[in-house]
Length: 188
Image (cartoon, rainbow, N blue to C red; front, side, top):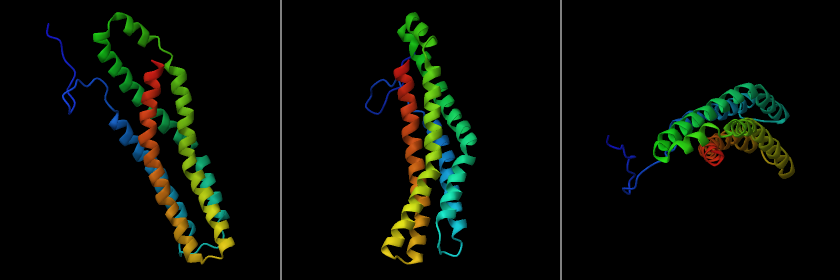
């Protein structure tokens, strides 16, 4: 029976491990939804382009972080389950070449604790998006008071917070999927 060889990469080397791009894309879209909601909160709190008091904005963003916790838990769980499923499938595919002992080690590996810890970290990262936005809005407000800036300048800076949140959401999606995969690899 002919042996199936792994696919070749661009340099002609055998490729054994692949990145979970679909998981990253999905996770990215969920985190971008949080960033878009931050944008909506910021725009909704400054509809006329003027912000006099940022405390309602900060409060709204902090409340949003609390509201999304169950959803964040679910989204993080789905991402980690997808990465774990892909990781497990990849290991089992490659374990055909590694032998019976490797299969035994994979089946009995302690990934449950690692996944639980990773999920807690993911929930905190998701919740940090609106919390960091709230902190930035608060800091901008204090800086504006100290520097006696115009209200329109403060509003522009506050609305830019959504772009920062969106950029951070993309970074989290990109790095955390890779980190989850790496942690599972190390655990196994």
